[in-house]
Image 1 (spheres, rainbow, N blue to C red):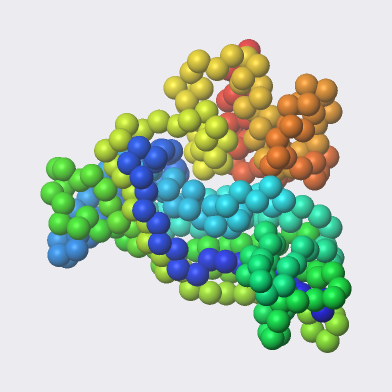
Image 2: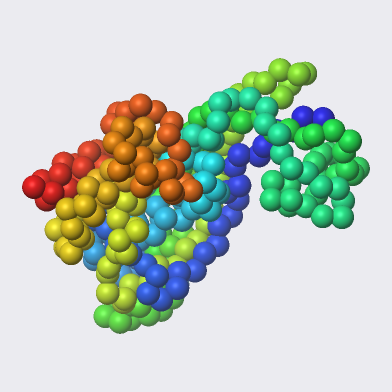
Length: 293
């Protein structure tokens, strides 16, 4: 029996950041936001603290919606916009293949597989055993939209010694172009669910970004000369082209074909990814190009 792939595993996300693991970015919003402690007394977040919160929310969202780095899923187009404590995250996911049925590896009741970890090929049947190959259906591109707001809680920490904040996220998650089978026919609908999750954001560690994280900052903020300090012209060229590569750009030069062809996350999906870049990515491409000289 053919099965549909559940494409949305959001539910309730509970996450705690590790000291030293947070990075920072700047967003469109530079206004300060209020934080409510657990005893109800409001305090104020600085613009820098709000930037940390925005970046952490962005990382949490994309980690869930990209299946924790599944190389078959490509962030075809992605945008994260903040306005005070309100946010909108939009992700068009390319599922690594054309729309249609795809074979999956399935085991019986005694064990699972990577694609079917619980060994239940038919979640509504009595057994995970099957005499024929199992399949899932995926659309080529589907869209995730998360809109909501966050509130921060200080847990009675003094404002002058604030080390971390607990962020409570509320809103709506909409999954568009969600496929399902009805009487042998594949249809699509919009699946909507409530967003109710918490994350913890550490505030005291010096703000810095690892070289491998720069492409993520480039999605939601303007890169700075400090971010790119120490990179050679070749490194800058790779950084600039990585912004395109993350959207499935097809490269023409041997150098870029060899470099990105060796990355398990890279898929050649479109001839030109320029139309898929958001406003930050476009500005960052121009900025890096100037630094290359």
